[in-house]
Image (cartoon, rainbow, N blue to C red):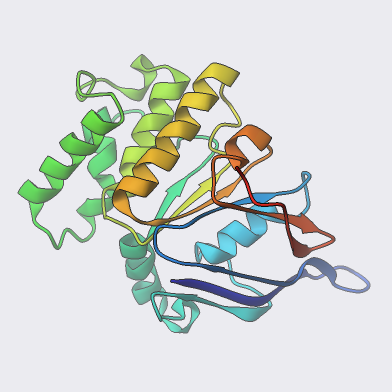
Length: 227
């Protein structure tokens, strides 16, 4: 379960601090999905970075699987993030010198508790599920934008995370490709029974998720349920 309580994020200025987030709270259970909407600069990506432990809040708490990751040391936090959270960004961030299969395996290299053979089998299985079974040895430069994003999704799922975070995952794609990526995200989230939290400008993608909220003046406001 994910619990986000009363998150405040301020940035210092020469006068008064700039409040980007003003007391944001949300809950997400295993298998649930949530879209966060809002205009550019509203704080959507900042909130996602805090939930993903890439940034720290000024105040408030984040609890994932009954742990507050910000109470951990830097080393423990990095290990927690690698085990518990998968990330999909607008830009795929694939390593250009590595093959598709190697890119998917990357998160397991620092700490592969399940063993190399199991990780290798899961990487192959995930690439089959995202429709890239014939592209394992290709480099990212040999793939289309949609294919590269499919690799990024497989990489995000390789450690069987409790939470999948996606920041504008279809923002760089044409409408048809964006639709297929949105369908794939939701399909895999349901198959894996994990939590999915998506920041997006796309009403079409948001409508595929169970719940929607909007950031308004730094606060989360519930939207009408999708569907």
